[in-house]
Length: 419
Image (cartoon, rainbow, N blue to C red):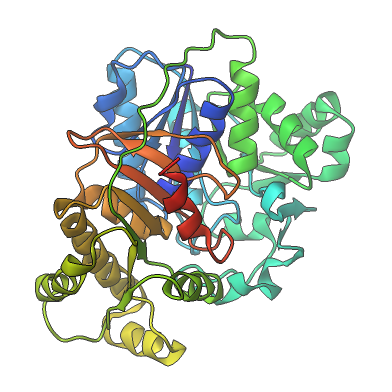
């Protein structure tokens, strides 16, 4: 193992692995115990976690357990903590706390960090985060129900999560090349700065950032940075590739765990052609009873045409009511528990193709299905996320970030599983 990528959610893990697989290198994604990958011959292994919204102490403990398991197996790969392209987090973390863990564990300063994914319109310039061409604080991300992005200054944002000093290598310096950026890193280190954010105005910034990171033991970055790092690390090593298993055949279903304008448009597109059940989070019944009722609705509808299930309310006021009753995170966790239970029940009833929207929901569904590892499949034009599970019965899956994809992306993914 040359590179261990620890992703803060499942959809990010699948996306990164798909990019590496497309480059001709096998890249298993580990969802279960971290030692499940220690017998793998793969050069790169991705570990999927649910640390983005976990309490900081829990997130740090999860990452520590993975590092301990890797090192107990006699390996010392480079480690990349892969986070969302917009560095979604609260002022408590978890990006800063994991950065502090890496600094204390490896003593490799300054630790380099990079947000952004220019391919999807998320960029960082002069330390400021832009989402789809607008400052993130002026974009739809400012209304994110769990991690509202109201401050576009990422240096300032990360500084609120750590006791270490945070600096910046801007686009202008990166554009001059690795030598110029290395000099700037030396100046920042001499000034006592332990964490350095690298701009990501374009793909060339990501490539230079990866070059700067190659010789370091650990890094933190989003899609563009980690993909570029993997490509740079693998360029001179033997490519080990074994074909992934074929897609499963059978009925399909879609689980929608996301909320917001993008999710609602995708739900609307799906239910124009397929049956859709909307579950009311304010239903006073226990989760188990709500799941049983949903499966009773779904059972007769499992067949040639996919079916959909969501906890997203038809009106925004209903979401506000649920968050008021259960708390913001409590409402999210209740939705995840319901949808994960429904997903497991659908698979038990014969569903073989399952598309899931929402990073946290995807993680909950994978846990409910007791999946240990998956193999990602190369992007087929709708943002990656397709994979085949290592389970006794064939199971094809599509795990998608809630804010990505065309309106009909879930139908596209389910159809792609039939190819």
